[in-house]
Image (tube, rainbow, N blue to C red; front, side, top):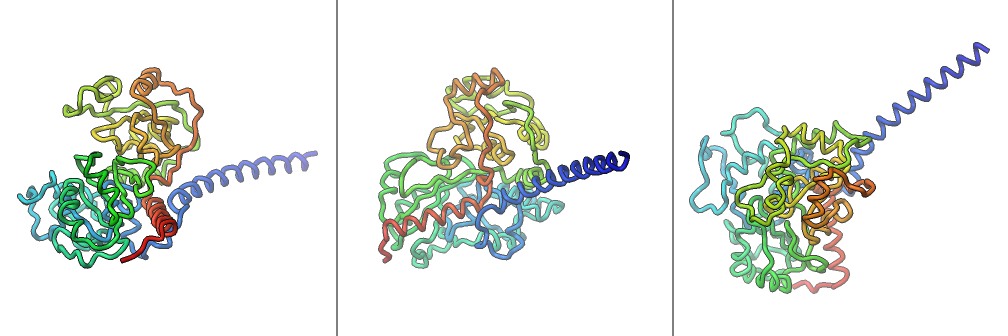
Length: 384
């Protein structure tokens, strides 16, 4: 009887050990699947592609996938020309390009201890931003069919009126911008969408939906926070969420219109709660099934992606143009309903898991490649 009892005890201990081991393996597998569950064969064998700035989708990701760019927000200054506290050149249309470059440098995680005077090095620039500067070089004859051209929103009219007429190839356009303004739908955008030279238009803050020549592209996570965010999701995988709905601090900037959701409802703006340090902020999101994530100074905002990457469903009032980005990984409703959910701190729908791949650049590169191939196959575009 004693021997039989010992066998049972050993069996129980072994079972517990196997359960613990399987839990650890599941966590590791989940994380690896989220960042490697899609085709990564096209990534060059290059150390810079392993940094969070490249892996995680963010406002400058469009520069990593384009062949040419039309931009003044990424002035690529030689390191020796930068002085501490210097400002942007007078001919720059961006708000603070050097400050932005510094954020990128910090976000890359390459030089966390180097003083701010170092800024964005030429080496990193060559590795991550490989596109041709069309504003500087004006080498329009070098553009090939199906080349991807990134256009900063501030230069959109210049692209349409001055640059596009000089291009004699069929191209893919990406419109994006780190800061405001976001692109707005108007007569010029409608006409551009019908232009035969544009075979596909990809854009942050999408203004069209369900159009065969248009594709929404994510804004992503702030470059300032990418490294900390990436490290957090590697080390803090929640197997169980204990909070139904969280409503965290949200800025109600003075320039927002009076009918903006954060101005209409104080609980979604000035009374949304105390500002948390980033790690605590991520901890609460990670422990939440749902997260209030309203439109900010534009519809797309960092919080949407921070939530999804942590397995949390954002509840938002953004327009349905964004469905192409978030699909079922976001719950979109009207302003009043978002307010009611935040006020009651309760959401009656059963929790579902979002698609975490949305926060990774490789996922969007694959979607883009698939979209281009479908256009080629379907329309059999005649190449000039």
